[in-house]
Image 1 (tube, rainbow, N blue to C red):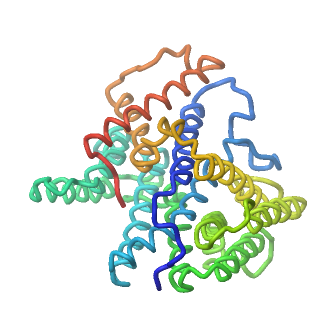
Image 2 (image 1 turned 45 degrees about the vertical axis):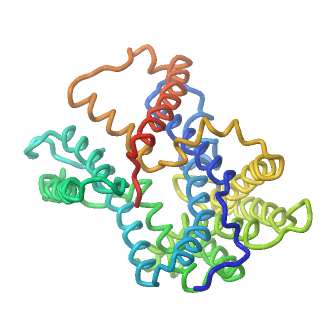
Image 3 (image 1 turned 90 degrees about the horizontal axis):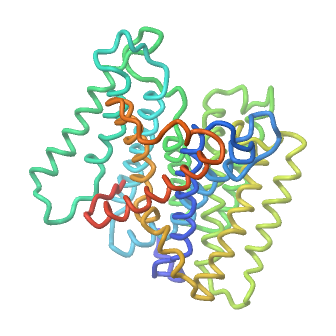
Length: 396
């Protein structure tokens, strides 16, 4: 792969802002999920509802942002002089790490036989959420090497031990990928898209072809008696291409913005893709419906359209109009997205393990619950600001 000479080489603050806003909303809706008596538009829509809320847009937005960052990540590594082997190794390690963390999180939630486990599922879950921090923390250069090795390899040893301590509700030892978890799904979608991106050297038209291919495979996978639906390995790949479509959409939009000179005030190719995303999404709606839980192509394409509109607005506001100060509130999350995703789980299992009640039950229902979810999300941003200051950052 060659260096993309036209690709912007400075930090794109609008991408960081979209990432920070998405993570803030993600923390809010995750906390809100445990609150009773809130409007349906503030929760995930049921699988058969043929509708979506802003909650159903959070996951697609994160996938979209992952895709937008891919061209910059590759360009940076190539400019640094990293070999193909180094880049491939890094890619595989990052995807594998996301998949592993996702599987541990899912198994912490359900599927265990507590009566047969040596440690309680709550402590198991607490350790499963904590261990990624020492393993994948970005240690400063002056950090003692021996202590870094102890923390990293010790954390790996704990995760391996947790695997063998886990007893399924079927009586079998060890975990299973009941589903891959949000992080695992991101890992698979990232892996498939990045491998293809590398093979085609980041060619825009080839990435558009991959986006189309992903949507077609997703559609066939949801069509009964199709050859994709009836073939296990094709169905497995197509299932992850559902989310790969959103990552590749992010790659395409990123290339359209930043890998070419925009001579007009309006980026017409991006506008065309916004129209295309919505047109395809609504055209496929009668066949598959809009469903985040089912992962329908209508949901992915409409989500891609909304994400592109949101990013275009941020690009106009921040890159053209230079209105950036307001985004400082969200930047701690943008700089450390994996840790802020894990941290609420650490808090949850810690409180449950030691029977600590942070807030009264009054804040688990209705308007007070909504307010608490906003307060909790804000607190998480300030916590991340402190952790970033002390160089506690997860880096895959």
